[in-house]
Image (tube, rainbow, N blue to C red; front, top):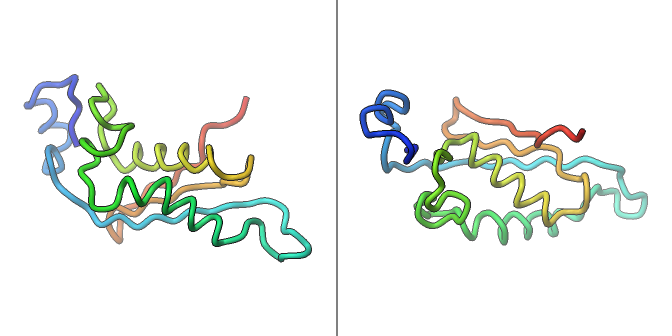
Length: 124
């Protein structure tokens, strides 16, 4: 994690041992909600959801340097690559390709004990 608007001392003070380049084996959970189709018994065909996650998240995020390889984090001033910001980016990517209002939440596990849940911004 690194905020390019700050000097090295402030980054190290705020982010501690997570300052700078390091990796994680994240676990991603995506939850959808909506009416269950009577014919299929599903809110969405799980193959469609799985494909959306693979195409719009995993292909860009898996085994990558997020600060150098993921568009939303490249050269972004003041937008550190935290689990919270990663969850927001994933949510927004999926919301843009899934049927309207079907995406409920994204949960991203950084470790087995630490996770972030993002529900999106509240509609006005």
